[in-house]
Length: 439
Picture (tube, rainbow, N blue to C red):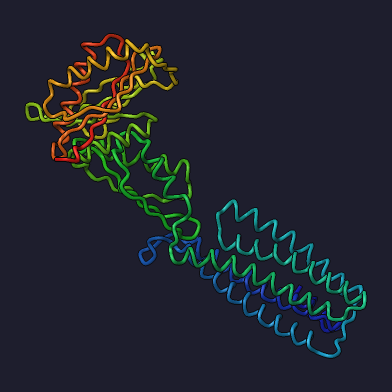
C-alpha cells in the first residue's frame, strides 16, 4: 500500500495521496512494532519481571504515538507551503481515486479483524492498531474529497485535504498517547477498585474493606485489597475468607489478578460501631442506638434494628438472625450480640389537632411532670397532634449548657416514660434539648 500510494502520489502530484503514502509507511512500522510487542508481552512472568511483560505493548503504542505526531507535523508543513504557493499542479486520475478506494477497503477489513482479536485478548497494542486503522478510513475519505475539489477546479483543495488527514492523525495520536501514558504511570482503571471493594464487602467474614489499589499491566489489572476480619477467627477461617474474595472477584473480573491481605479487626468501641453500621448497610438495613458494654469480662454489643412495620415476627427475626450471623463472622466468638427489633414506619400518617380541652389537659400534664426534674429550666414550642396510632407530642426543653449529654439523655428518656405512663394512646414523643443561654 505504501509503494502504491507513493507511486500514484508522485505521478499525480497530489499531496493528499503522498500524505497517505507516508501514513501507510507509518502503519507498516507500527504494525511491525505491534507484532513484536505482542510476541514479547505473551511471555510468562519471570524472576526479573514478576508482573509479566505486558507493558511492552504500551511502550510500542507510545513509540507509535510519537511517529504519528512526527508524520502529522510534516504533512501540515507541506500543506501550508502549498496553500501559500502561487501555483499548484495536481492531476486527478482514475488510478489516483482507485488507490484511495483500495486503501479504504483494506483499512476497513484489517481494523475489523484487529478490533475483534483485541476484544478477545484484551490487547492494548492490537486495540491501538484497530483505532489507528479506523482513523485511516476517515483520512482516506478526506483525500477523496480533496481530489473532488481539484476536479471541480479548486487546485488547493488537495492541500486542505492533506491538512485534514494530518488532523485525523493527530486526533488518533492524542487518544492513543493519553491511554498509553495512563497505563505506563499506573493510572487506576476507572471503577475497578470500587467494584472489587463491593464484591469483597459482600463476602461473609469481611468486617471492613480498608483499602483497594489497582493498576494496569498489559492485559492484566493487578490489584491489592486490605480487608479487616474478626480477630477471633481461626487461621483456617481467615484463609477461607481470603480465597472466597479472590474467587468471587475473578469470577466477575477475570482480567484482575488480586492479592488479598487480611488483617485482624481491633475490637475497640469505635471500630465495632462502624462495622455494625457498614455490615447493616451492605444488607440494606438500618441500625441505631449502638452500645458496647463489658459484662463479666466479655464485650456485649447491643443495638436497635429497624425493620418494616408490616413484617411478620418470623420474617423480622430471620433478618435479625442473618445480620447477627454476619457480625459474628466479622467479630469472632469473643463478643455477644443483643438485637432489639424496632418497627420503622414507612407510610405517612395524617394528623389533626385534638380538641382544645384535650390539648389543654395534655399540656397541663406535661408541665406538671416536668416540675419533678430540676435540670429542666423551661419548656416551650409544645405541639400536640392526633393520628391513627395515637398522640404525637413534641416540645423543647431548656437545660444548663454545661450539662453532660449522658445526663440529658437519661432525663429525656425518663420524661418520655412518665408521659407514656400518664397519658394514654401515645404514638411518639420527641423532646428537643436546648442549652440555657443564661448559664
